Length: 305
Length: 324
Image (tube, rainbow over all chains, first blue to last red; front, side, top):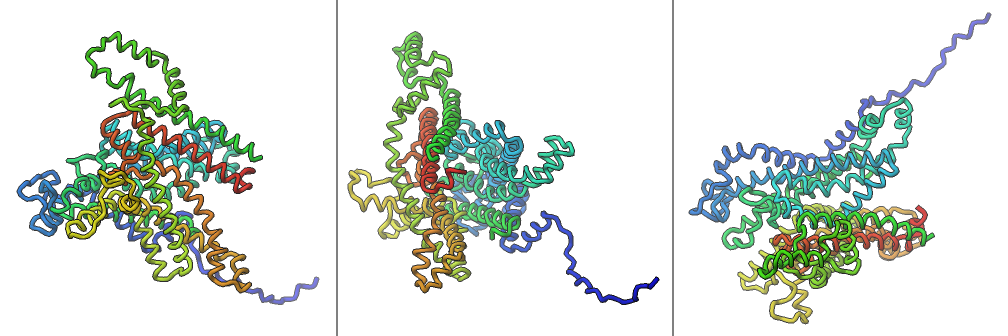
């Protein structure tokens, strides 16, 4: 028996590929988001406003040393940087900065609550409609058509005069329209995910509908909801401020960025800052929300850049 | 094939119309109940007289009959009566619609006329300082609250300019009070600020959109072919590329058609513009539910039929849609 020749065959050594850590879809998206400087700054601004909203009482006590309700008729229209009033006072001598700080509670509270409720209802409707299809899908989607056919601002005004809203009801009023668009988006995404192999395989293994929907379908459409939610936040802040401005949302004495502007026109010759500060605050918040939303969208779908 | 598509679309619209009218009708019933404008102001009316009036108006009939009667009157263009002064909602709508359309149509046209050149400029000078500042402007413009922009413009161009003794713009209204409104210049002067505010958002969205659409088209083969043939850059950009770049914009502008009636509400209130939006706002403050719901029904039906018309038009223009 002839032993095989002891020839050493020089095999090409595999070129070591630079180790790429196994990262999930979510980690990759987060990585891309973290590299987006503008997006991260915008996110930081949003976090700042959220913190201001949460710690409004402490900020008022420690920094401005004023209560948002304290009326001082001897000192109306104080200029910014005047003693004891960093941003001056309004027509009733109330501290402008304190009121802006408390106003963050209204805008941020309603903003996040309305987005959360819209995502919850719209997400559920979209998942159910897309998953079951047929009659359920038809009925739910026609209902969405109905909700979206009525001009939103008309509905908001109607509900505002019917319910005399507080922070929570106003968020619910805005969400009662906002869920429609997200339901449509989620349903569209579900339709494309539903027929993929992993779904068929899981169903074949005997998974129940609830498990299929929430354990397998939901994580695959979650990114649509996150992107929509972060872009919708700015819109809610704008709508809410407009309703407050019109006197249909949160009304004085509770300060909100919108209702602080209601009388600004009248007092223009007494104080220009009353017309500018709340507007700039709304602008900054919405700008940050939109930029952050764009960054989130780019992080999930880099092709869109 | 086209006919089949049209029939299918019309049939799909019916449940939406029924849904919208059912919702507004139930809201109307819940808010106004069987209230008849004026009966509580007339002391001469006895309870049996009121019963007679209710019978005459059909308010004693079952709800579904009332709904169908109401639907029937809407088909005939009757959107009910105000519960505060008994005036017909339809007459109010026709009083206010021209002003609203004057404002919204101007704003949309302004938006188109300004956003396309801005978008094209951004695309042609991609990455330049000009492009970056246009992008920044559009991102910023989208975040400005319309009511605040209106307020600031009034404070600057009406109030402050007047205080400085400069020529100033009127702060509200369609025409100068006391005039007949025949003066075109007067109307334009009143229109400038509200239309600018309303166009602002359109410009920020559409210019971004034109830019990305233009960039996509400029990268396509037929544009390279056109350049290779020795065509002037001007011809390539404006004759060949732009035409295809604005097609998606048409869809986007079409999506704004529902806003023709409702989109200007906040701006109308800020500028005391006597349109549909301001009418709805005024009536809402007076808790005149029947008028508010009448206008809402009108606007919703307009949106539904607008969408239907747009879909059919698309199908006529683009045969691919019919077969989808």
